[in-house]
Structures are given as C-alpha cells and as structure tokens.
Image (cartoon, rainbow, N blue to C red; front, side):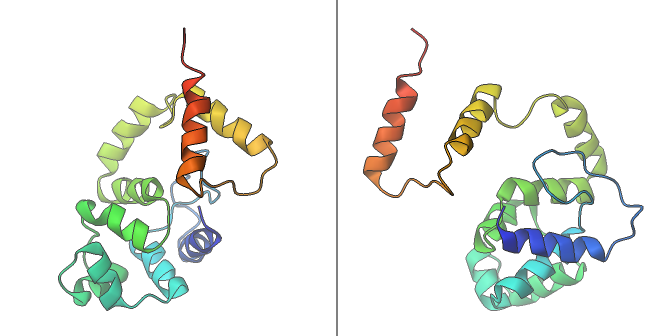
Length: 161
C-alpha cells in the first residue's frame, strides 16, 4: 500500500470513534477500518485528482456522483472499486475489503469465517514474496519484458517434477 494510501487511511480512521470494529487482517497497518467515504475523500484530497478526472477514470458518468460518494450520500458501486483503486493508486483488494465490510457486514462476516485461515495468496506464494523481500532489493519491479521473462523462467523451474 502506498504511503499516500496509508496517510488517507490514517486521516479517515482518526475521524472515527475508537470503539469501531478492530480489523484483524495482517496485511494492513491501521487497526481500525476507515469508513469508505472518509477514506476516499482523504485519498482524493491527497492525490489532488479532480472529481471530473476521477469520474472519467472510473467510468462514472457524472462528477457529482464522486461528490456524493465522498460525502457518504451514496456508496461506491462494487463494479467501480477496482477502477477507483487504480485511479487513486491504492490496493484494489484493500478497498474491496473496506466496501464489503461496511456495505454488507453479514457478507463480510461470512468471508471472515470462510477465509479466516486461508489467505488470499497461497502459502507458497506468500513464501515467494517473503524470499523476494528478504533479498534486500528495495521495491523490486519488473521493469522490462526481459525481467518478466527471467522471472517466469525461475518460477517455471520450481514446478514439481
């Protein structure tokens, strides 16, 4: 998650009562889930993106809808979570979890029950990420198609015999 997204989460979370539900997810740094509209409003303010540009990037017909989402007058449509996250440079899965937890708490409770011990990534994928992080390379990126090809070759060599 980008520093900007964490700042937005902090700003939004600070507006909430400390009695809010604690978030037990291990991937996210803030313990209290911010309200979706407060989180998005903080992100929009931090990024400086205009409501018009954001609406266009998300495929939302009117910038007034963005204003309504920011104020909490309307919800972010589930189909617009990924485009909104991409436009604001935040992790789409995180924004998804915020939306589901707030908009449909019963569904979120079901997700937590079913996936409580099953992370979104497999254990092998998590181990690979940990190895990458342990490599000491700060913020490794696949910058070229050659980089992607080399990584695919390494991963292919890990296939079971």
